[in-house]
Amino acid sequence: MRWALVKVSLAVTAMVVVAFAVPLGLVIKELARDRAFSNAERDAAEIAPALSITTDHEQLRRAVASAGSGDRMAVHLPADGDAAAAAGIGMRRALPEDIESTRRLGRAATVRVPDGSALLQPVALSSGEIAVVEVYVADAAVGAGVHTAWTVLAGVGFALIVGSVAVADRLGARMVRAAQRLVEGARELGDGKLGSRVPEEGPTELRLAAVAFNSMADQVVQLLANERELAADLSHRLRTPLTVLRLNAASLGEGPAAEQTRAAVAQLEREVDTIIRTAREAKPQTVAAGPGAGCDAAEVVRERMVFWSALAEDEGRKWRVAGADTPVRIPVVRADLAAALDALLGNVFRHTREGTAFAVDVHNGEDAVIVLVSDAGPGIADPEAAMARGRGSGADGSTGLGLDIVRRLAESTGGDVRIGSSVLGGTEVRVWIQLAGHRPERRGHRGGVRRRRPRRLVPTFNRSRSLP
Image 1 (spheres, rainbow, N blue to C red):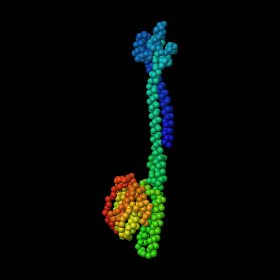
Image 2: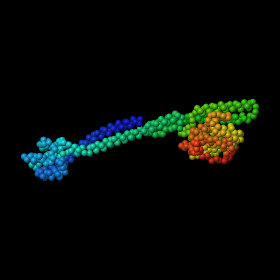
Image 3: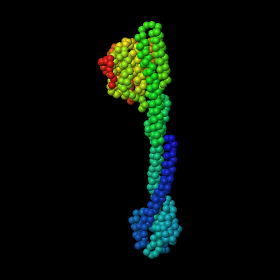
């Protein structure tokens, strides 16, 4: 498209330049010739008053010299029997028969002479006879300024062609750039980058195409978000009641019925883990950026703690939430963050004894948001092995599904997940969520990534706390 516009512009401009430049060049040449012969006629007219007064050769020579024409002018007097008189004054270049023809006809004539032309102007003398004034016009004088004018005209035409080609190239590049962005956006959307959008730039048609593409992408994101919401709801509806069921089964005591119940609950948990893991592997990776993604982390934390706080009261656990009283926007789908929180809090209830305290902290920084889930349990002896289970290896009776959910959430934004020791004496899982438009601050050595640690808050626990 771009080269097609350039070729069309080049052809049209070249035709326009030729259509105007060629006639204009011929007009310039004709004007230069008319100017040269007009000057010759003016010079011949300057000697006419002297001829009407006298035919004395000496006076006529002085008149010719005063005219400033030099050797370009000659005066041919009529013959009176004296051959010298018939020869005239000045240098003759025209043929004698041309001079006699002009004298006989009584009108001006232009004849060709070597290296130029001669203007023959008849002048009536006081005696009634006709003298002929000859003015030599060189070819160089006829073409004076013509080549310069043609050069300027050619330069202007070339500049017009170059300018039109440049303008057509810029317009074509603008159109091609908008079309390429539309193609790239479609390709990225097809590759699973749901946050891809096309700038609404370029010609009207391409702007409308970009608007339609962005609307379609928003609809795709919304549909996928709805599906993810359904998957998250399924996770909440199955995993959370299973946790309660497992805790209740643990309190049944001893006996065949109790053992069978606990075994059935364990088998059901494994089946649900398998189903959810398969569903998550079949879904595209979380999109961290784009108009369709993003939520208020504080609101999600408060919402999920409504459920987990009730379960904590049943088990006598102290709990605390900090940093969730003000909005904290993050580039993560709401359902993904809720699933990650449920996975972390479910691990706390699953792997710690009843009565173990836990806390959820939200730290809002300039370039990242950190969500800390800590407990007062026995802790994790090997955090690296726990993260390895989160990548799907499975060990020690743990599928690592919860950490896998959390890891995918953090890595989709450019962040990460770290496991360490909490101020409560147990495990602390730190979820670093990178904000859009920022990159993690890299320091240290050996290619490691070190980030500033959030300031820890001394936790205060309540057995019952109302959430805003």
